[in-house]
Image 1 (tube, rainbow, N blue to C red):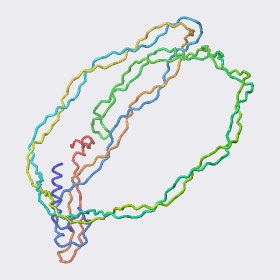
Image 2: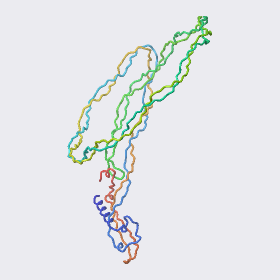
Image 3: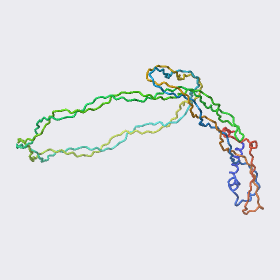
Image 4: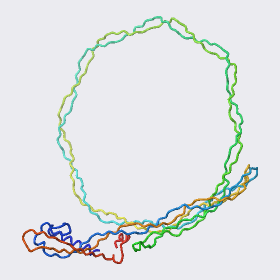
Length: 439
């Protein structure tokens, strides 16, 4: 492959060094007008062209299909009586087991190298500069001004005014009033209670095996690596089969009830009466008067003055300096370690206890039921992929020209191709894995 690429590069260099019109079949379709030099016999050259080929490989997929199976369950007929019944409850206890696993721990190593760099250091210099500024100085002046103002003087007068006021008088009456009080009445109802009297059963479940890497042969006859499902394993697990039993329990509750009773009640109500009286009232009114005052008024005006002062000014310039520092380089490598950890798991056991209450005596009866479970199955299918390759091709160009002449002569070049496809005669088509590995 490297030899073909080197020959292709030499060919491109030779073609770019000549005249553009002598491109042959590497860029021009034909010659419209050729000089006599172009009609001389030329040598054969090797070029590369791209060929595409579609191949197929087998891919295995795992699909789940529903499968029906027949199982037996126990059906109980209930008879109620007051007996002592022994029940079982599940108690879960926690236990631990040790597991050894491997972890990869990163180990960091630090080294340093010398690094030279250039910095710009600021250098500050202070100089004095003359600066003119203007200030505003206030000038105060005082003069007198007459101001007239209006003042209000209070004048008090006494007048009589009729005032109406309301007087309240108490009146006692006897009326019949209905009073409500609440009593509690017992009410008995029957509630239906549903209890689960099921049991544990063992059920076999198939677990698909892990995907394994195996050598497979595709339809093109190539051997490649593919993921193939491993053998399935069967485990047994406990499944709780529920059995719901309904039971009626009497329940007495007290319901509030409102009772009405008529009772004579003496009610005292207040009756309003209006009374008119003459009341002396003092009224104050304000009388306006004009007063003239002489007040001093102070005015301010601003006078502009110019001053000169020396202001220190800092000038900064940059100085180039070269510095050397040690740059730390950190490398990381992974170290495999074995650790031990405790994995908790639960252990279930049945604990008996006795309950005295009205229970049902169950008569067991076996019946068959149909259940559905999902079964995994491996299905192969063909996946198409495209392979691209560079095929070396020899091009021989034959020129048909008349006698040498100085006029423009049309030349026709008919190239013939010879295709060399090494490795295809034996059916060794490349696969995507071989192309990715650079083979």
